[in-house]
Image (cartoon, rainbow, N blue to C red; front, side, top):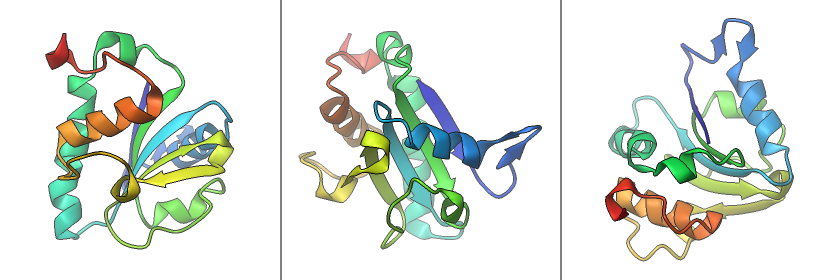
Amino acid sequence: MVFLYINQKNFKKGKENLVEKLDDLMGKKDAKIFLLIFMEGCGPCAATRPEWAKLKNVLSNDFLNRDDIVVASIDHELCEQLKNLKSKPPSFPTMRFITGGGEEVENYEDSKVENKDRSVDSFVDWIKMKSGENNISKEEQ
């Protein structure tokens, strides 16, 4: 699993451009991208980002070893550089599942997740649904 956090301060990390890396991953047909698009200074974004960040700590090792899953967050100003992002976010925060090289997109708010309270548990449910993984939460083991 690939975790990317891209904000204005770190979007270029040494020689590697993290925005380009995310865009390349988004362009892969078999990649499953879970993307949080946030805006600095946005209250709902500030409440959502810590829950999104918890994903790295609650996913099981079996799930973490999958190389087709990407969990990323990106500042909205930088997402304009993403060529494989087909539409701009309507509001902030926006959480999207992107696959098929950017051709298939589902917004978290439109998903079949029963409780869309933007908690880490609801994000785990969403990832579990979209990835087909059965044992992804360390707490479930």
